[in-house]
Length: 421
Image (cartoon, rainbow, N blue to C red; front, side, top):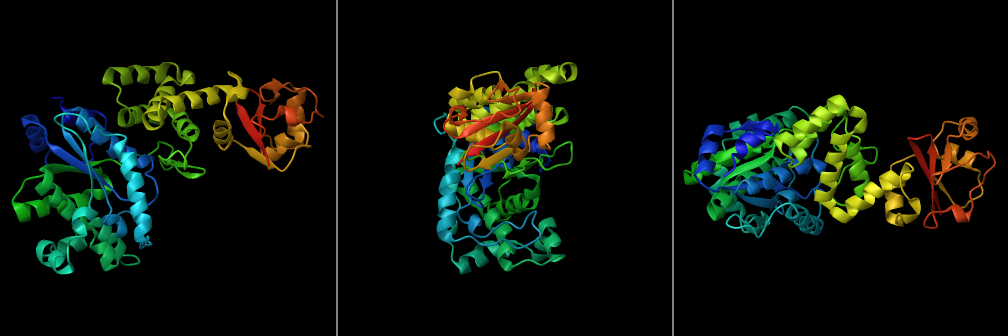
């Protein structure tokens, strides 16, 4: 069986652990069960959830049994970790709908047919809904010293600021009970999660020990950062979601294609299943041929195919090439064009009639009409990949792609667009 601990360490995926040597020894004896939880706080997971999702997949590929937990109960409460203010509670039917959507997303990354380590999918509402308030307080709450709960970083930070409701204060107890239930039901002996979850996860470790006398493990994964100081997974339009209706496959692909040279090798380790030898070759390519962006292409292509499938990857690669004059724009579908142009300077007009010069300026592709005229005069203005040399050229209905779109380009690398209607 693969030594998954060594692999995780090489990939920089271990932030904290209770006892790595004991965990390694337990894994060496045979398959263990490991879980990660995902709360339905939105209708989709975002790219930050890729870290625990793909780690579960790695652990399953190493021969162990993954359990994906969707927080049908904890999603009704809200985790105070990493927040300065109280969460707004979502309606029960809304949370239930999000639970089903997250089940589908988590399930894409796990193998439910593998033997003998087929994945499981559970919701913590299945056992939490049965708890009465008396049972919760007598059987679970009595194992949580208040002084230790108050000392947890997420709680202390909130108490030093705007305060914390009993609802959110109880979150760590509910999460700890999840570990206890999975230990009882499925022999689960490892919980993984983001490093901001350390307090919640170790509360579960302690609860299993107190109630059942069991020895279980905790392992947290580092929160991903970017070398330029900006937040990983954030775009101009907001979070990078896993749902294609919320973040298009094109935008997802472009995000990783544009990864900084300083970040790309770390991302390849964290987010792909490439071997050490393959990643070291790509690291060499970054050092020797950074202009070729081989590592970025490898990263963007593997992740886009993993999340959206081969057909969507081929569509976004074709769109990316076509926008820069290396393919046919006419062959791109309307959804692909719309998604691609949403990522560039864009003008939205009710009807045609403006000149190309006007549209270049209105879209923001150039800073002014005089700059647009200069681009035309110097041979650097393109409409749908066709060079335009007439400053008075006015696009017509015949120029529209899919009846609605125009692709503008200045030089080789600056793209803009127009959407009509």
